[in-house]
Amino acid sequence: MIIAGEASGDMHGAKLAQSLKQLGGDLLLFGIGGNAMRAEGVDLLVDARNLAVVGITEALGKLPTIRRALGIVRKALVRIRPQLLILIDFPDFNFRVAAMAKRIGIPILYYISPQIWAWRQGRVKTIKRLVDHMAVILPFEAPFYRKHGVPVTFVGHPLLDRIQPKSTVDSKSSMAKAPTIGLLPGSRGKEVSTLLPAMLQAAGIIRQTFPSARFMVSCADSIDADRVFGLVREQPMLADIDIVNGPVSEMFQKIHLLVAASGTVTLEAALHGIPLVIVYKVSPLSYWLGKRLIKIKHIGIVNLIIQKGLLPELIQGDASPHKIAATVVGLLKDQRQFNQIRSELLRVQNLLGGAGASNRVARLAFDLIARAKSSNDE
Image (tube, rainbow, N blue to C red; front, side):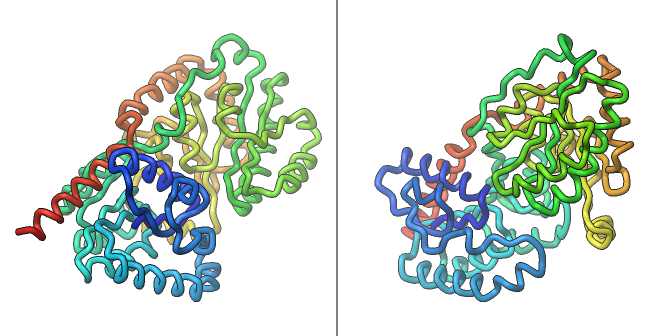
């Protein structure tokens, strides 16, 4: 059984299902996921799109749906008795499923750790009690779990299974006079409404120093394109801005530098060797709570991986048009610092363990099944 409750989990679950079938032949794969997992032959008990929520209010509204899904999973666990339960991120739901499986003796592999190293670290006790093995995708996660006595394997980042890092545009040829700058305001409506206006105003300020600068805005599939066009039209100085609706990787081939909302896409940019400025802004209440709960020095995943503040992070009040512009202009003017960042970014791929994460998880899965069978035979 595989449980993936979000779009990213569905993508990783599909790749894992593919690897499991390649290694194990004729398998019964079932659980919770989306179209990607369904396409790989996973029999879906519940469509993950019905479970995806953002925020407490929406979560409360989905409680009946979530309870129904848990009931369906419970019955399937008892009726089918899978040889292994694989959980992919989605902790609030998956911890409940893990407890069900634990009670009836089904081994549990957890792939893609919840970010408990950042906040609510007490959840590691729940993981230690319920989970047989953690398969983690960030290099600093393995020492965290070992410290707490949880069996763990660093399997590498699945992003490397999906993309092939490539060189970006020549950073010297056109950057000095006419840099091309990408703006990535996020994949959720609230992020775009909060961050894109500041990014666009910053673009206008940057043009005061670099009049020939070009700008490209990425519009994720999940975002209302009309909203993005409307915000761009409010900036007459940016009438020539390019709005990109295709895969963000296509934009990465055309830009020198990126201003991006914090998230996994910043890691993808880093793998393409693109220096970037990370911006992050939430409601005052969320920021106040986060400051008290979050236990890490950096919010950018790249900075966390290399364990230093290589990429500028502009958080909350610092994510203003003038500070964004000043940071970008500073990087564009300082070729030495710019090239140093690019060189450091080349290290990230090696730190992530290389491609093949899904195959490593599949091998772990069969090892756990074999161990459980051996233990039962004794």
